[in-house]
Amino acid sequence: MTAPRPRLTDRQALARHRARARDPFLHRLARDEAQDRLALVNRTFTKPAVITPFPEVWQGFDARILGDDDTLDLQPGAHDCVIHAMALHWADDPVGQLIQCRRALEPDGLLVAILPGGRSFHELRSALAGAEAELLGGLSPRVLPMADIRDLGALLQRADLALPVADSDTLTLTYRDFDHLVSDLRNSGETNALDARLRSATPRTVLARAAALYTDAFATPDGRLPATIEWITLTGWAPGPGQPRPLRPGSATERLAQALNTTETPLPD
Image 1 (cartoon, rainbow, N blue to C red):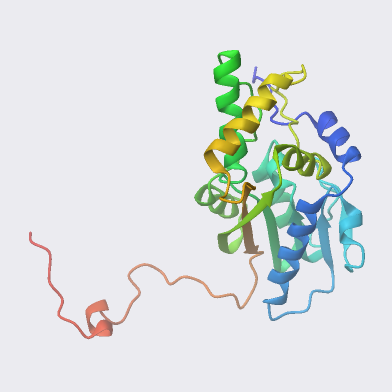
Image 2 (spheres, helix red, strand yellow; image 1 turned 90 degrees about the vertical axis):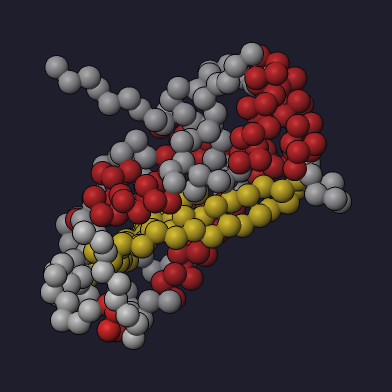
């Protein structure tokens, strides 16, 4: 008998956090990034869909809006563009999410997925880990195991998307103090919803020590606290006619040395 897949996310806790979010600024940043990416594509999309936990963030964007459930409310081949906005990092099965998006695309349709990468909020993770190790003698599950960009690029290939691209951009925010940083994350609905998290509240002594460690290690000369966000943007196309395709290995008609106008040096036997 196959053991059930361990869950990464406590979906009920995540829903509570999102319901209490007052200003999901991280999701607004993801929206702006997605719209910038679409502006670079020389095509007009007439049947887009957006997967987001905050539909109000996408008001005014002419698209079908749906939530980030395990099973997405998408019909096969119904869309020429699908945007997975700031939700893939909470998915228990990210490959499954991308496959569902791929199936919802018509031939030559575009998928854009935006999520935080592995360097996001590394300063906060370091400070909390140091405080817990010092005061509690160990670490508790607090932070999502955010994927490396190379691993995320491989997910696009597993989802059978053509012309896969994964790239990153780093944004650094600065805060007046530790409490304002934590408040921003809470207001974005992005606080700890790991299924394996401790259910008890974090002791105030741990938070106070984390704030001190954060300041000691990362504060700028003017006393502000930097917070790094690594945006990962994944793009891929549903296979379709007319797309560029790699040539079959061994099909080249000219040697590389000839193209580079240089002398070819054969390898020793």
